[in-house]
Image (cartoon, rainbow, N blue to C red):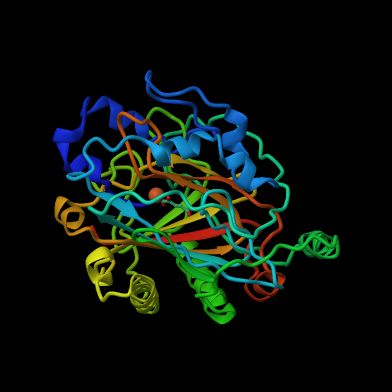
Length: 390
Ligand SMILES: O=C(O)CCC(=O)C(=O)O
Ligand SMILES: [Fe+2]
């Protein structure tokens, strides 16, 4: 998702400073993630991949995910970690809520990640939600080309609306399967807030159209990867400045295009989302402390990811931003539009070595609102924008 996590800014808490954290962020990882540390309890991978399945609450109980959330916090006092907020749209009365507090959405999700020193909260349980069965996406063979921008930029919109998508969605709607909508706006854990319904239909359409317009330009969408050859299972475009999984914010000679500016309208939305999150945090806590938990952030980079039906993103920490940004605990704001996703997050992937990981396990096919597809021509898939300040 985004940048830097606590870990890299607090070397004393790291047991094996380089290797453990370098191996943590494998954006190309295939789910389910396996246990990392030797001292870790063995858990059933099935229970973990069950996050967001049709039996979210029972399956969550023994999952590795909860091991992350329950891990010992031996350095709790000094570690900083990111917290999150999600905003989810409700469409046709249907919202997906996934696993331990994750929210995929029919339409949009906004997530704010901040780094804060507060003690870790419990993982959120899935509330009042039934979740459609997810078809497991296949794992494609790795593309060995390390180069970027060899192909023309990826177009996130199709020129004609694929009517089979609509048929599928309609059939699904008439299946009689209902998904109850839980609290629209809620604090999932300290500093992690979900705001469902934050992005109106019109704003979502504008976001898609703007991203499409920028995305087909030379600095637009491409499939990022590592020099060794593997590629992420998504299309990416950076606004404001460049980031990539290989060089992070460093110079990348493969990248010959300057990122387009972040549209002002996007920055205004980020501001509004943070304000909304503050109001919610204050309301829930009965204090006026929200800005300390979730500092105001003015983005200078927006990473736009597009996931097709088989897209995903391995578990990782957002920890590439500047020391200053991390020390200030600046939040990351994330908007998601289109298909829902199983978004996993947890305290620790490896109890001994990391905390605050997240990833996109799978995209829920044909879960995007038809009105959005009709008006924007967004391809089947999920568009995610994470705003950060380097
Ligand atoms: O697509 C998402 O929701 C997550 C994206 C993400 O984690 C990232 O860009 O760092
Ligand atoms: Fe991330």
